Image (cartoon, rainbow, N blue to C red; front, side, top):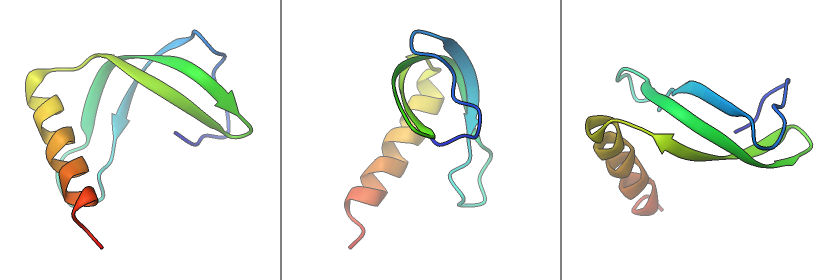
Length: 67
């Protein structure tokens, strides 16, 4: 994730992920900040609905198969 205001490591956040494909954003109920570097941070998705997880997996598979 890139943001202007980086949360501290071990902070918990909720967020929406816009996949830029015209579909509704993904709602991530709970994520933990695991690393921070400059204006970027890595998140661990802790609480995510099964439907949202399926949509996220489909999107990642699409990216993996796109040249």
